[in-house]
Length: 99
Image 1: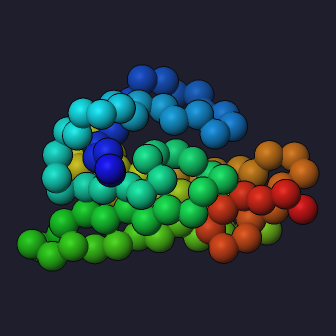
Image 2: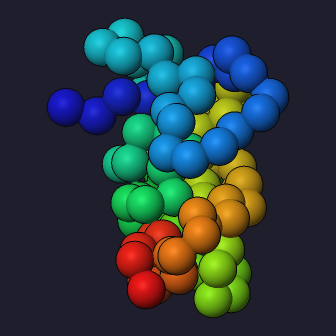
């Protein structure tokens, strides 16, 4: 089951916390995030609809220690957030993993 949409409940994000995920209650069918939000340790894909067509945004490595993490914003469009890997981790294939 995929959950869609996010509602922001906090502004300070650390670790693998799932901020704003409304578990079990989809908000809209226009945005889907396969890793359920701001999760740097799992490579996910956010899909939204632009111009009537689905557009996929895959999580990717910005550099050796940062992930470009895509998530569903309240606008039901995918937005990018820069996630810093934890100490002892590196970014590999769009996710933070142990060195």
